[in-house]
Length: 231
Image (cartoon, rainbow, N blue to C red; front, side, top):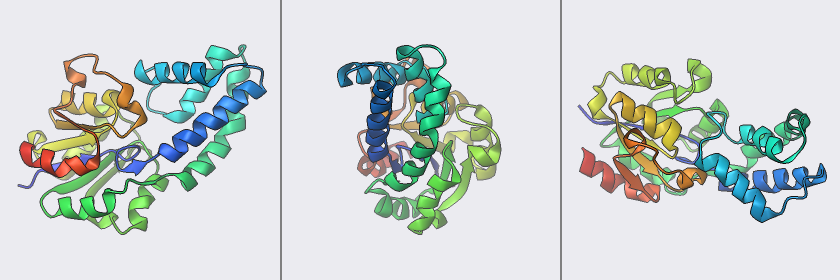
């Protein structure tokens, strides 16, 4: 049976760096508009601490807003600023994200040797990027949190994908960028794991053995060689 390779979407197959830059610029400016008086150096120190130390869960960037506001401004501003920025950020995310440059050739290439799947907390809007470039046909299974009703790191979304794959766990590989919601649960279930570092979450360090990936790659271009070593 062919090995089954599951991918995360955001910051794994989908390049979100332009959105990250937009997010930081907008949140930094808004915080100061509301009286924060914080410079960029301290802004990034606080933001990186939230990422590195897993201060937020599976909701991603939007959760950072409330946490940053809570650290800097008086109580009560968090929900106000969240409401001010939410629509802007969601609308511009759709415009700013794109597939990583390697994805268009890599996915068809891998599909010749491996069965491919998606396990992601991203919305169907993000998954539609694969459809846009006619890459969706290469994925046998797509498990999105909004469809399943469970978000990573909940084992249930992984288990749904594993059951649908009709493959043994030791024949399944998870490729993702976050140690806390991709690598940890996949390791706990017995999947093989590959961490990608072209992501904001590259500053995370494993807290224990269960968060340690089997392999780490700097970019997706390294994936075929690493997969050949696993399988």
